[in-house]
Image 1 (spheres, rainbow, N blue to C red):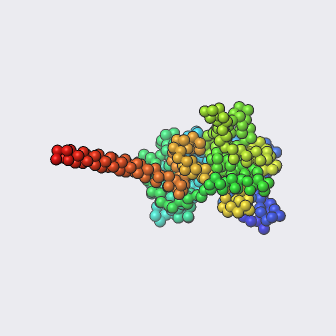
Image 2 (image 1 turned 90 degrees about the vertical axis):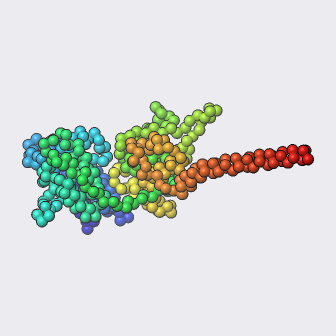
Image 3 (image 1 turned 180 degrees about the horizontal axis):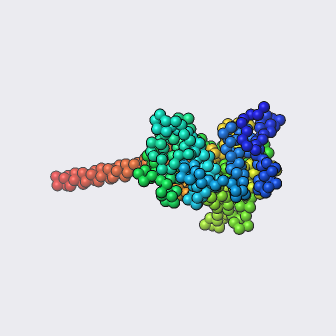
Length: 428
């Protein structure tokens, strides 16, 4: 029995423990014709949505290769000036490629393809039409609002927000290159769409004690690579996707060029980070900054070039396999709901609890904007207490100063009174 609808060129294999692994395989005919792809593991126990998204990445790569290889393929001239033409032009344009990281590009393609395929009514009572077939200069604020409400009405609140964000950016960046295709009265209709407020779920976090309880437990279970993953997320604030994709290599840990640092890279924004592991104090004594973390790394098996990889040396990749393994190990250790996301959020929260400034925190996290950075730290009891203590310390200091001043005044007044009495007695 097939567990879910299978996208193009995918297959599955059911393991003895009941879990299901999904694979994408390039057809033999295309491989013989020179396609640079063979096969890839998409993940394990995927939902229909996760499987579709994972397979779409490889199918799009294969489709692009086929288009480049076949010069006689029909040109895309029939769609010139349509929304679908604009999407295809934008995703190949430098204004997109230079601003959007490679990691985020598949999400843009997925959302904008759904925009093109969405059907909305023409006018109030007209027939349904596919949005991608509409001409760019036909899109006004009311049409943009219809598209937004079509997504929102289907229960895709987060996707509907992405639709507005992505389309707004596409209109803004492509208009200077094709000004005749856009409306003059409404240059960017997406500016006029009011996005509904929604209550966003607050992601959980774990503290330092929990992270190292998991790490030590994972090592005892023979899963040192999972222990290292938790430490990389918490101490050096790596995203799970960066860890699974091998952006923390053994060569970057106390390597020949930087024997006192660990070098990692953040996949989402392309930022590299060089974290010092030690320093010499004023007496010339060597001080280790991440002693607990380095103890974990010492006990992490070197299966491959990446600090975190499978026992066969392969990367965990973009699927949910790494997350599943971490969660399963956490449950076994009695730490329910443990995840690498929570480790990273816990590390970000600790930055705030330690009183680091925003600038100091961003030096460590490598967030490019203050807005992106601020959403991570949680409002813990410790942060609230420290803020209250600082606030009241200032007020208490002022009060103490006033009380001290009042006491001095009273003492001085007493001295003057005694002096006056003594003089009066002398005259008597």
